[in-house]
Image (cartoon, rainbow, N blue to C red; front, side):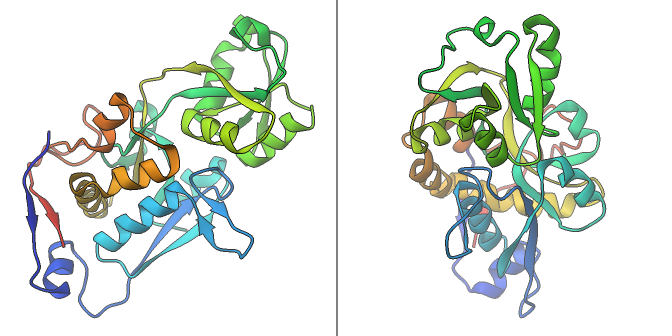
Length: 282
């Protein structure tokens, strides 16, 4: 549901005040990301961070009144522990909204749809999951792909290999130690396009979406991040970033990339606040 956009051009002080930032006070948003999880967060040769996820969280932070973003490189398996110990304030690594996770953390509304897919070498036979029977499947530790493989190990006789970083899982497949890599569909499709002699196969439509997450005791921070995200959706900025990295949106993409929900959080999950509010852009 799209709501009217109120544009305020009366100065930075007013804009940041509306979004909860203190005028004249430098404020950096500390976020966790698994750097190397392409195309979300990647380190360039010059040491700078780049990627779809970095572009989005940077735009969100700017809109929310922050002076910048500090990316804290954290293996996916450690992002929840790091959040609880306050090493950072927001998990910007792509986290799929799930009921068990909503018991521990607060989600924003979603910003990109996802699913699960396999990455294999171009000459690998992988037309059906049965083709992977008895094969070694590489996954990110703590991810939804790990949970999926675990749930289907008995049925397909998979042998699971866990890695702290997706880049290590991909390397394992490329050198022949793993038969396939399972991960989130946006990442797998991007890698297949950029890595020669690989292909994305066996897409599993999970119906899940990625969102940002914060600690349960910080709904104000979640709402501040979400208001900024809603502005990016409503002005077309999020779509612009999406198309830069993934190409033209599908109809399913549009529902999430351009969709704004009436309250705060992920509808239908614990932590959702049914508080109607206007989309405000500074």
